[in-house]
Length: 405
Image (cartoon, rainbow, N blue to C red; front, side, top):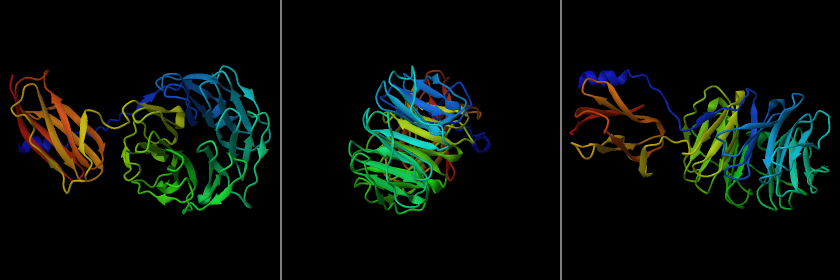
């Protein structure tokens, strides 16, 4: 047994992810992503690129490019209509799912960062140093909305519902409209962090992300905000919730965070791409989603991004780590393993044969605290003695089992 334990300690650790890299066809930064439904979405990039997917993000095709400008924000209003904005002062609109684009913006050097429509006619654009524009005629004309004195740049604008809209800026600046964007009043965010991402579950419950790992939550439509505890200090550029419980936030240094309990606990998922910045995330369901960012990178999941092949039994935080004896034992050909994780972090559950060779890896990634069950089907393995090992940053345990055929 001692030899086997030494072997386990020196096995190279490979972290696998259920976020898959999908080809974008270029290496330009992708700044924004938006979906009209679970299948139809668009992303906007440097070099005036706009990408489209019709299968939920699995594959992408390019529908526009102009090297003279970049696009920083996009909103799919419905399956046919979308609006993209960028620099210098670019506003593009399509009514045929990207087949053609009409330019609505001018040529002066103002950065537009974000765009949001409540319907095909009424929309808002936010941008550089107090830029906050509104249209009520499908973008034919845009009018500057009055903003407070000495405004910062407004990074993000988002319609919460038909009447309410929110604006986020630097230094914790936050504005709220209750008249479909005709006017805005200042809110107290309770932070001085730069704010970038926003997602509302319903009219009352929403989340905002920003610098220094900031995540804020409101349950009163944005009037008041409470900070969430996060495991990172990286800037979080975007957040998306699929329902009241399930959401993801993404940002600098390849950070991907996820919650499945309404923000009470945020845990870090492994990114298959390192040393990049994620600028956008869009969940189209609790399990389906897309992340976009630097160097033309697109990530796609149909499993929620968590490791597969394991079943959470309880979300109650155990007092200590533990690994139970597999059941049944002896077994033929399937058995299962129950284990307890006391704190968030890397977890590896690995099976070895009697001479210490790795036979299978059942878990290989970050898990949140809780009790889990993993199954192993040994149909393709010979009879004999096997060992299984649970390894975390602070725990290591190995047990014996017998496969009989």
